[in-house]
Length: 398
Figure (cartoon, rainbow, N blue to C red):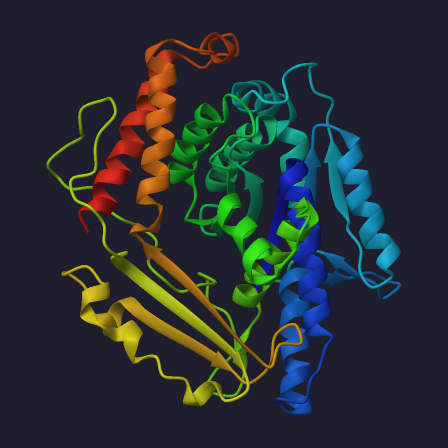
């Protein structure tokens, strides 16, 4: 079962390269913690899922690279080619209007319809090279302009044209201190659209990854390359195959095998505007948790803490909400490693904060004209606020 990755914008393309480089390096490293046969099966599973072979034998990433300027794409293609180990195939760059770089509406309303056919043709070409398509992995930022706007548009297209395939979006949450002045507008627009068209959102907060680099890795001058490598390690440790009891590496149609949906209460939508949280969250109540253990002595790991009913919503039993995958095959030269993927209340406060900041700007009509001139109406803003406030309410009350 193969995954086609769509790398969008500067953020998506830079992270995408690090992810593929990590996956390739890991699949070709063998530390002897599992048998040679198991390692060969692991490598074959990774290759089938993320790479395809060309006639000259060089693995090609199952990916489509898209950006509005050539610089980052050219750098990404060059880095992959210079590695001599793997390379990229499908890619496209479209010229953007000067000054439209931070405008979500331009990416969604202009670039999307204008380049839809070309982009979807590239994706179709990559899909046709898969023996069996599992789904799509879309890497993008939510704070920028054209990348996030175009990413939301393309995810909707994938929903329409490949309705039976999983669509998973890996999104980068903006720094709290701000990257662009309209980042909160861009974020609420992206999130509200992806909520309707994506099967799962994998969220990474820039602030959290920055702390990992500073406090755990002791990096003094933290670069985006450092941050992207941490992200790639986390994603790779989740997406690489795990060994089943039947003796074969396996994937599911849903690569993470957990429940992603929180269904809003029937009572209706909240009033539009800034809403306060109904209760202070002392810990994150979860709907689903998946722990992935790799490497030495994984069978001896004590996971009883994850089975505590207090961690989960009252209408779910831990044996339903909690899953664990194990494999003795080590990841990325670490003797032992663990990854947790959780659908929980973790993002209630960050999401509530972004919605609140965006609402305060919208109430004073700040920068709204930058969106309406490209076809986004004030009603579209109100729809996004309503949906995301309902998400905040639903997660707050699980």
